Image (cartoon, rainbow, N blue to C red):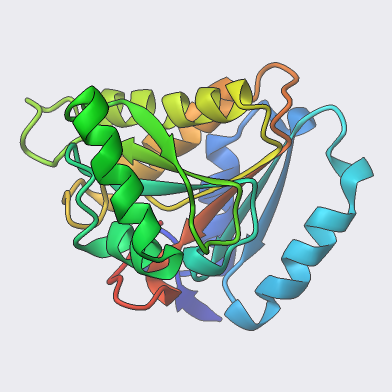
Length: 226
């Protein structure tokens, strides 16, 4: 049936699946991709994915779903942040509010120590009350402000988040569609850049075993996401 697609347009589920599988072409032996557009089935899907640890041996498990990232259980959640780590809108505001005042407080303290966070860079802070060990603040490009280099800069940002998660020896990571909201990078550019970065990262065996890509349209106060 006609469902809201995860690229921001209304498409049939089968054509959408075909598009995603095309992006993962030739790498199926190293990936297990799940597709879920019904939020009511999300919890069951994630429980099966978490409990089925034997299913992810030999490759990176990629889960694509719609949901509220502030309620996602993972070792780390990725925040779509600005250079000042001022979590005033979009996904950043939702995560900051759910995590409590310590999230913004820790972010302010970090900027005081290291200065503004450059585009393409990822830093970590406490996740506060969020269901994660830590929050990774990824500063993606602003649409129209990087001389047409939105895609390579976004790929760099996502790879930095994945590498940081690996360095911190995390096993599970959840991220929204970075730069697609307030930063106004087209959803198609964002989705292709993020999938490309995940593909490149997953070419080798990693400590990180599961990456969840979340359409945050179900997240309170956030217009759209993945």
